[in-house]
Amino acid sequence: MQVKKDEIYLRILSVSKSLFMNNGYEKTSLRMVANKCFISKSNIYRYFKSKEEIYETLVGPARSDVTKAISRFGSREYAGNYTVDKIEDVSTVLAKVMCEHREGLLIMLKSEGGKDKVMLTEMMTRFFVEACPINDKEFKIQVVSILIMGLTDILIKHSEEDEMRYRLKLLVSYHYLGLNGIKEKLGFEVS
Image (cartoon, rainbow, N blue to C red; front, top):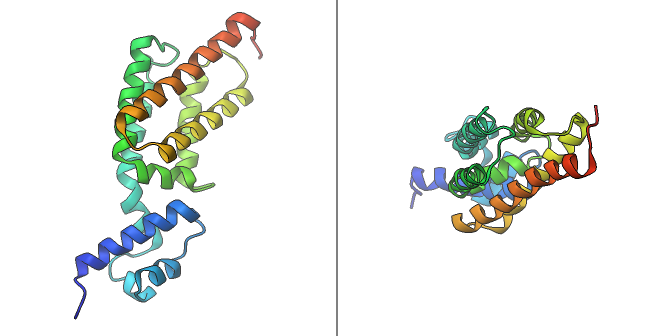
């Protein structure tokens, strides 16, 4: 009995997703995917041109939506102006994106040195540099790294949108209020 092509295509994606999330994109080979799918490596090429194309299929929509969200929250309307209503808005929009693209985002964020993780880090740093009340770029990069670790942790531990929104609200509030507290209470103005 011949297995339907759609079934093999979906199996390749499912196995790849699992391997990318557990091992990282860089440490997953097409040979590993083929073995877990019980097909030959050459059979994968009937469905995908490369490992990169599989990655793109799994991650592309997540990248697009999270990039739009981060761009929106990096705008002048939001940057450095995180009032309670804006924090609620950021949390709601990000929770929706994170819930809808949970696995794709985890693949992106768990790929050490991967182009998408680097892109997200640079994008968040660029917006954060403008919004952060402290003039120390190295510190800002450290805070963005911590923020990305927090986002990754939320994605790993939670899958319900309401819980994600609650956790994001705490994380965003903590970062914004904490940074303003450092500036206001400790008088930090490092050049």
